[in-house]
Image (cartoon, rainbow, N blue to C red; front, side):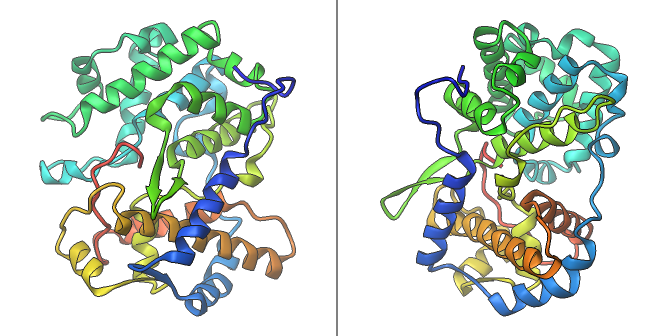
Length: 329
């Protein structure tokens, strides 16, 4: 466990992501950014919508009906499971994030012990399969269960079995919270190598941080976590899909044909890394454009939501998203 009193120098996780993304953007071959279309879309569309994002409660559950321990545990669980849903379509199942929310909300009612750290540390694949409530074996079920087990053991061993201590012992600082998790939970270490350089993407750990921030500020007595302004967007499937449709991300012919023909792109390939990194760079550029235009601080996570939501609405009518089988998004 780490705190501000520790002598060890703590690196800002989100800054590592931004630096990685910029390096890749500067060296990209398969993916380019159309800055003119980016600026036009930001000015004409995003600037009118930037304050139009939902509350955490409206997307999950009424937060003030539950104790803080359960809320934090719920967030750690859902963000341990929140990756790679697209293979369900190959199995004839329509399973999206909202379905995961419904499955876990059911556990809030039927099994209150489920969100205790010691319970999660021993969760079996068969039980997780039942919780997800799909008729056939859920994709990457072994990895999802490992992710749950790891977060449970982490809280048991490092925070005396208390999810609330994860916040308290790290001074309500998102960077310290995320750093602590990354040091002990392998399934959040979204790192790779690109042209000989170590790269950090950290999608799921940052979305966990954003969920904690958004939820805690909706409590009757809000807990304001520090550092939300540093977080980047969360590089996954849907946002690059909509950015490609808008012409902001330009894929070379080979990559575009691969995506259009529903062919898998290997994890850690240059094509996959460039898609994700350029998506991060786009949102950082949009953030700067909006701050210059609106003269106020803008959070990248809010831009991410607006783009993700537009992609969700249009997902069946536009160029498909890229397909990479991975535990990181």
